[in-house]
Image (tube, rainbow, N blue to C red; front, side):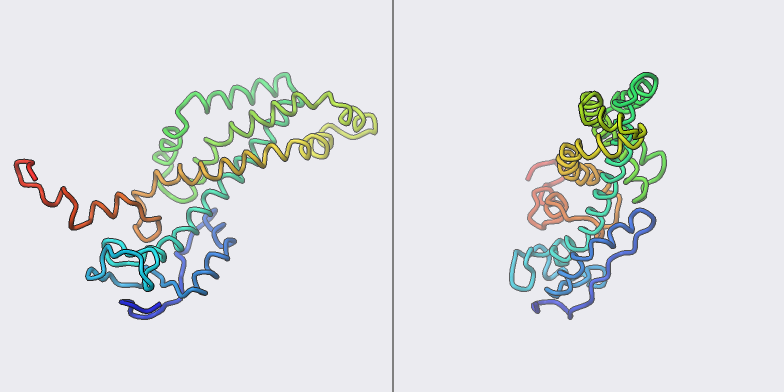
Length: 251
């Protein structure tokens, strides 16, 4: 794809750290980028002469206010978005499901402790709680993952507890107990496989929510490493009404 570009460059994804390295597993994004010749927007110098152009053969999704290819930005930023979403949902699913199974199957004081912990998290507006966690710990990829996982954990814990509470007296559970299986083995081999279909449905829903929640921290990240948005483009547009207002506020 020629056009106003200075040449094709190998797509180099910004290096992450810690949990953010999960994005390396999404190698398909990088393969597709190289196959269609997408440039790395970090290496591509700004070209204001091509700012805010529409879709074309050279720029499939158009360009931003600095003349950078929007498709290239989307491909590079997808690694961060998917990495954060997948990792946070995996943590919430793992810990939330285990806590919910323990609470629903054991009952008693285990159920009360898990229930009070989940209620404490849900007592706060979840989005505000996540922002508070990130503000306290620091705005980094790892802390965003932890915050997103914490606010999603009660969903899995409550769902797993409800299912385990209903199924702990089922016939197949009693049969496994009569065969000499321990409590932990019954939970992991009998209850967990039977509630997995419901949990997978919740995972598919939570992935989308995690991506939306993660966008709250995009404003403080470098422009290259986040997905472009309509507000960002309209604010820099030369035809924006705000640029043509006089000092007295009239157009």
